[in-house]
Length: 256
Image (tube, rainbow, N blue to C red; front, side, top):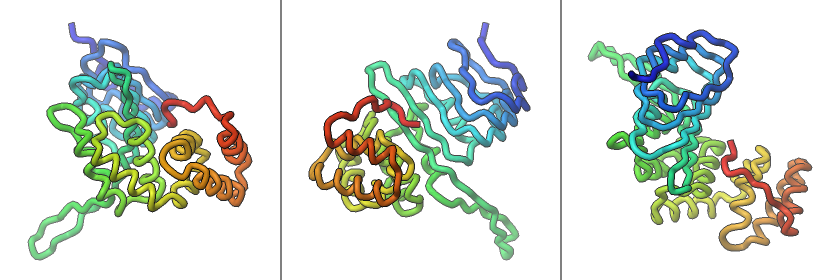
């Protein structure tokens, strides 16, 4: 017997903030979580779950998807993203112990009237829609995802670029040498911009990674400390002082 979540099972639930899809679930029914406006985190046991029409429609605060097993079919991740326009972060674990942390940027679109042809044309803004298409043969196409970096670095804001770059370098599942070089080259030319962003957001996981890897560690650490002091963020100043003195530890695997 198919294990499923029924149609409209949790629709209109305004109190639910997170939901763990039960192990063994094979189908999530139509509009099962429709209009669950407080739902922000969804936990999936795997990606091979069939998704009914509009299952997560109007879940406007859903921003995090956590998948326990990324092997095999990841169609349900693609289907969930299909209903989303907001930014989504997906953390995915694999049996070999590797992990991926992917940012799918938000996007917008509008219909523009082509009066001579008497038709409306859909025009999208941002790279988010293209990132949602990074699936092939029911699996995440990491090469295609990384290939969109050339687009994202032009169309996306600092907050998006800084996190895509950090997530892919810190969790390099199926990251090709070419893509790694592209991310690192961009980091080298945008150090000040990204350091300022990580400091303002108190993203110590990204700071730890970039200050402890690569060349010119002391120079980067000094730049980061100077920026944190200028921005007057005591917690980051303390973190950076501890880091330079070799005391910093306890960095989370997933910085969501």
